[in-house]
Structures are given as structure tokens and as C-alpha cells.
Length: 327
Image (cartoon, rainbow, N blue to C red):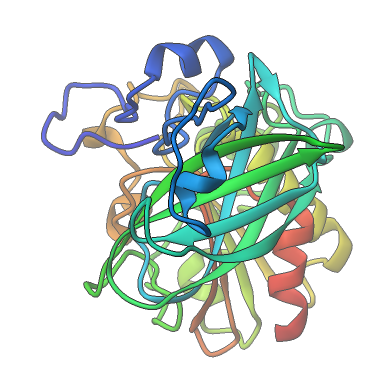
């Protein structure tokens, strides 16, 4: 979802060109949705090796991913694939990239599929999108700033489907940039059920509020921190993301790493979250400066950001792959 920073009375909304379709699927706010590609009836001839050529004679899918800017260099891009009204699960997917539709595209890069198992395993009852059953992820190296286009090709026998996604790449500093220092801010801490319910919208509340982010960044351990609001998340992917983080927490425990959930909208003593507007964002979420969610940030023992997963759902396997080298 994207925060409309210029309207403090408006709900958090994504700037999506096909918002009504995603709303029906429970996916409003995941990020920028690139136009889906179709080509079964196409007769044009495009330059060989271009994205336009890849799209020719391919059926239509939607590639739903992040529209948040990234810096040049190696980046992890996660996305969902949708065909018709449902998710495309565990498909053989290859990704290509180019700055325009007609120049030669780089690739293919194999996209990995990660199932999302945390929702059932952690007994979450927070809202969940019907699309939040798994995530595709690919590492790509953006050589320069600009608007780059990713094209994902799915093959099944001789049939091909293609979808595209625009990725803004900038030389400017982005929020939670890889290699940058994590921002040290206090976050609420609780251990009792009522105390947790005051600072967490997940149902039931999670236990990743046992240490303040400010203190975690001082104790010499790596830290995994999520920025999410399970109850109020328009994309309904915040709960599944926190659940995936919980699986990693349960595997390693607090002794080896810090695990923190930064709630966006604090329920308070009456256990009623405020309206989901930028004005009501929690202090820690405001301090970091995110304009969308959910995010999972993995930080090493010296406070340097080593992984930036989001906006959108992150899988336990992705989080574990980023954390394990830091232990």
C-alpha cells in the first residue's frame, strides 16, 4: 500500500491503475501493478531479443510487485503472478529486464517460488489476501538509474504467458537503503496479553515486541524488523508477512537474533486502533519514513542494513536466507 502523504485525512491507498480489480482480490495497495501483456492475436514483428518480442503471442498474466524506488546495483525484487482472478502458484518463471520495449533485454534470470506457510502455522486470524499463498523472488542488477521494465515469462509445455512490471531506479537515497545504517528509534515493549494488544493489531498479537528497536541495535546481535499492520493493511499481506517473520523467530529464538514487529497503528489502552491515516502512524514507522508496507528489514550486528524485503509479503525462506549469514 502507498501512503498519501499530502492528505492526512485520506486512508492509506495504493496508486494503482487497476485498483478495482485488485480490491476485488483483496490486493489493493501492494504496490505498482504493471500492465499485463497479451499477444495471442498479435501480428507485429518486434526486434529480436526485446521485451516486445517476448510479449508477442503470449497469453495475459499480471505481475504485481513493488513500485517503490530502488538504487542501482543488485536488488531483490519480489512479486506475485495473477492469471484471471487467482494466483499463479509455483510456476516456472523467468525474468528479463530492459530500459525500453525495443532494445535487447538482459536475462533470463530464474525466479524462485517461496510458499507462505506462516499464517496457518502461527494460527493467525488477521485479514489475509487470497493471493498471499506464495511469492516469487529474483535478484537483478540494475546498471543505472531510470525506469526499468521487468518481464516475467511463465512456460507450461509450449504455452507462454508474460506480464511486466516497471521498477523506478534512482541515484537518490531510498528508505532503508542496502548498506545504510539502520535508524535507532524506541519501539513499544510488552509481555502480557493486554500489553501486547495495546501495541499490536495482529489477532492474536505476536510476541515480537519483547525488545525495543533502540535497544536491539545496541546488543551485538543481528535484527529482523517488520513494519506492518496486520488488521488495517489494505493489501492484507501484513499479517502473512509478520507470520513468516514469526516462523524464523521460532526457529532461531531471541538468543541468536532480535526479532521486532513495528506496528503502524497502535491500538492503545482501549485496544482500538486509530483510523489508518498518515497522521496516526506510530512514531517509529514515521521516523523510518516508509510510504508503503509491509516491509522486512534485516540488519547485521553493527547496525548495517543487509536485506530490504518489500513492500509486500516476504517469505520465511527469504528472511532466513538473509539472516543466516549474519549469525
